[in-house]
Structures are given as structure tokens and as C-alpha cells.
Length: 321
Ligand SMILES: [Zn+2]
Image 1: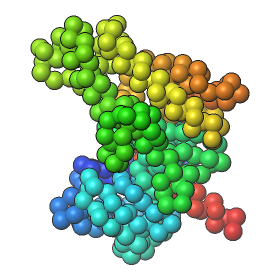
Image 2 (image 1 turned 60 degrees about the horizontal axis):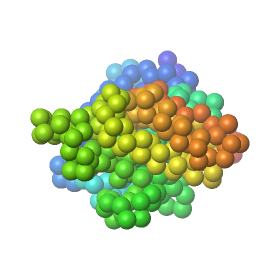
Image 3 (image 1 turned 135 degrees about the vertical axis):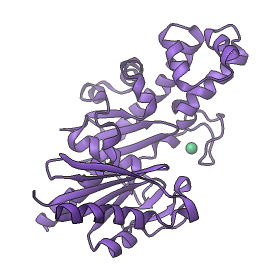
Image 4 (image 1 turned 90 degrees about the vertical axis):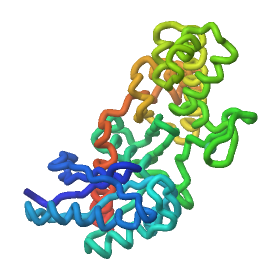
């Protein structure tokens, strides 16, 4: 077996790791728990120990390690200024992991490496300009322009969840109001469902809430699928807002693909059709004619594949220099 790439995807509860070859085939993948005790101070040691144990077993050479982490990341220095859900407040991730491994380390935020994975061998394959949208608890984004992640001056580019869509809207974690994420995330869909129970107490959704005492985003989507008018209104509005935002982002980068991942995207073609309709309503024709909206292909492997791709890209850059 030849030399390999290592991809690491740090999440709030588990860290996913993988050995991947230059063609994008996963040779081995595994998970370890994320130890968030003591502000996550053991995480870097845990990652290297876990890789090192496997390397000794099969004697593979490693090109480098590509890591995706949550939070605000300075890509050049690999410094994570804040990652609330794993406890980091100022973590020199790149330097710390390079010191332990003696290997080149590349760091990106988690939404961006998921985008890179899909770009390399997932739903974004063959597309030089694309947008990846993660619809989960929040709304994440990764934007690829001319085959590279768009980072911006300090790593904030592509944070599409914080595009303002309702000036008088509800409060968002970022400190603003009416962000895309307050509407189009699982949290946002659930909130709209809860709001509707007061304004439309006769809907099937409201009846269901009175029976169960709780509703989820999936319930709202399922009731919309079954034709409950209130739920249809919520989902139509949500998809319209998202499609319009994507048409506006698309105007800036002219993508050939927009890829949807994350829990909410499991609703699949039902949501995709509605988002697509809105996108085509708001985007100028030459823009939407070239652009395809698709559900992500790689599921939970997108992060480790994207991490590996970061390393592969650095090898290609070396060749040119
Ligand atoms: Zn926000």
C-alpha cells in the first residue's frame, strides 16, 4: 500500500478519523469520543495517539493530516479562536498537532471540509464553483471558487447561515436578528411550527402537539408532506427564503452546483424541489440554467474525505512551486 492521507473531523461528541488514498478511497475509518473535559485540552493528544496506534500496526507512510474543527478558525495559522461545543477558547491546533506528529497539518472549519469532500468525490464532483449548505441545528456553508475553499480575510467567508433575511426577525446565536439560520435550520423550522400552534390552533400540527407535547422539524416537514396547510405554509416559506438567499449568493459566485447536507436534507426531494423552484424564481436565467441543486452524497464521511483532500491539494501546490 502506498502513502496515505489522513482526514480528521472533530465534532461535539465524536471525532471521525480516516486513512484515505490519493484517489479518495477510504482504506480505514474509525471514531473516538470527543473529550470535552478541561476545555477539550486532551483532544489533540487523543487524535495523534489514535492515528499513531493504527500507523504502527500497518506501517503506512502519511503525507499529512487534514483536520476539520467547529468554530472560528484562522486557516493560515491553524488557530481556533473559539469552538464552544468542544470547549476550546484559543487552541493552536495546527502547531500542536504538527509538534506531536512531525507531519504537515492543515486546518479548516467543519462546514468547509464537508464541502471539500463533496467537491472531491461526492455530489459536487466535476464542479469548479459550488456552494455546500449544511441544514442541521444551524445552517452552515462552504463555498468553493475555482476549486478552492473561499476563506476570506479571517476565515468568515461562507458563513451563509448569518445572511439577514428578516430585519425584525428572532434573535440568532451570532448576536444578530433574523439570520437565515433562524428560519431554515432544524431549530428554525421547529420554532415556526411552535409559533403556528398559537396562530393556527386547528392545524393537524397543532393537534399533534397537543397529543404529544412536543414537535420536531421533521414533524413539521412530515405534516407538510401529508398536506397540512399550516405546515405546507411553513415549509414553502422556509424553502422560498433559502432559495432566494442562494440566488443572491449565486449572483456573486456563479456556481454550477449547490449541494445540501445535514439532518434536514434527509427530507430529500420534497425540500429540494421547493428550494429549486424558489432558486429559479429569484436567480437570473443564465445563472440558474448552469446550476444544479443536489443532495449531498457522502453523509458522515464528507468531513474526513475533505480533510484528506486538503492534504492532497497541498501536494499539488508543492508540485507547481
Ligand atoms: Zn446569525
